[in-house]
Image 1 (cartoon, rainbow, N blue to C red):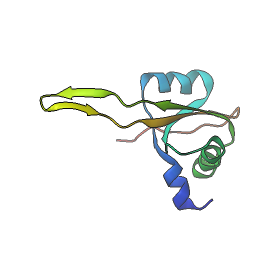
Image 2: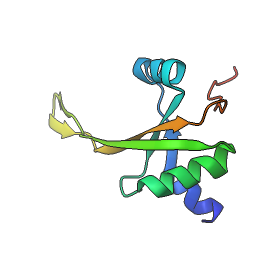
Image 3: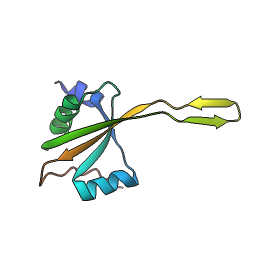
Image 4: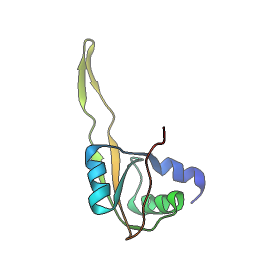
Length: 98
């Protein structure tokens, strides 16, 4: 798997209150991934990009919400989220220095 494909599979870290709790309690990291990405692709991409050992990957499809504005209704796009459980002793630092 080449580096360009790795960056197309893993799009961005997903930062939320639930993702922070998962990181603290279950040694998990949450990422926004490509809609057509599979669990083995996500596992390989995370292991190569962050140099960690992945124990398991759980994915879920997030349906886009319908928003209303003064011009009518707009549907936000659907996307895929991956919960990556890391092996014991492994860690991904997603903190943004600023």
